[in-house]
Amino acid sequence: MPDPRFFEDLGPATLTELASLSGARLADPAHGNHQVSHVAPLESADAGSITFLSDPKRLADLAGLKGAACFLKPEHAAQAPAGGLLLLTSHPQAAWAAAAQRLHAPRRHDGAQHVHPDSELEEGVVLSPGVVVGQGARIGRNTYLAPGVVIGPGVAVGRDCRIGANAVIGFALVGDRVSIHAGAVIGEAGFGAAGGPKGVVDLPQLGRVILQDGVTIGANSTVDRGAFGDTTIGENTKIDNLVHVAHNVRLGRNCVAAAFTGISGSTTVGDGVAFGGKAGVADHLTVGAGAQIGAAASVFKDVPAGETWTGFPARPLKRWLRETAWLSRKAGGREPRG
Image (cartoon, rainbow, N blue to C red; front, top):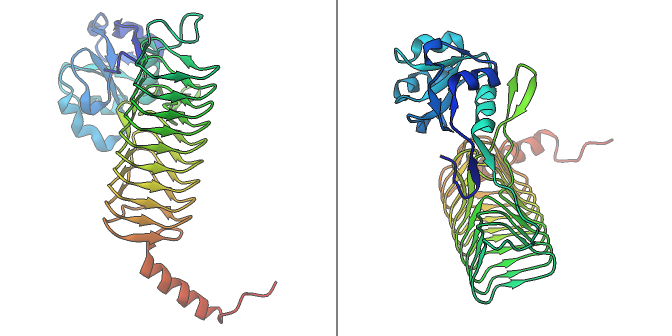
């Protein structure tokens, strides 16, 4: 279930209603009155939820539906358990997005007051001019909020934190002694889209951001909330200005990321990893503990722990040096003439 501090429950809904909203077709019309209350990814779907399958590589996972309803393509229906609650569509992920919008809504600021009366502020919290604190938010002792800071509904900010001017924090749990510099955005929707019958549609982002103790987020950097689970930044990790951490990234403890680094969605980064400026990491990769990624490197494969990689595409440093030296010799050791 999406965290109720950040998302409002709009359910339940019948499968007939969700089929109509999404353009899907019930495999068995007798299941039309079955109700679901929430959406879930395939790996955590349970009774009362609705999920989807679009990747044929995951057909074996249909065996674990456990009573959940599922959007899937008609050609995959035979792989589902007998009697399953199936909704057939050529665009399962887009259909699931429509169901998610029907069942869940992000909580928005309500009321006319800048600091909502339902928020909780401990002793010593400093609110500068123009600060907005949403309902249900909690801010710990001796935390400073600079002018123009926005703290979203349900957000928890720990003690002794420093939040810079015009920073925006939503859908997030923030530890103690965290510094978030001016203009940073924590918890905005990650980039998720799917093709639908009428074109590309946004996929609802129903997860959170967790910033552990001692984290620093630089000016104008962004940390997207998870698509369904959490985006996590480990203890004492330091992120420079203008860095992007995408949804569902798990960044370990004591990491550093220099300016313009981009870490794509669902990548896992071990403890003590260093990223040089403008480094980029593709999605669904693993960067092992203690690895170093050189400036402007473009990582398209898993990086083993403790190794230093650089280049485009990124590869181990010694290999990159050999290849660069070889290319220089073949070119005659001189810059080409214009």
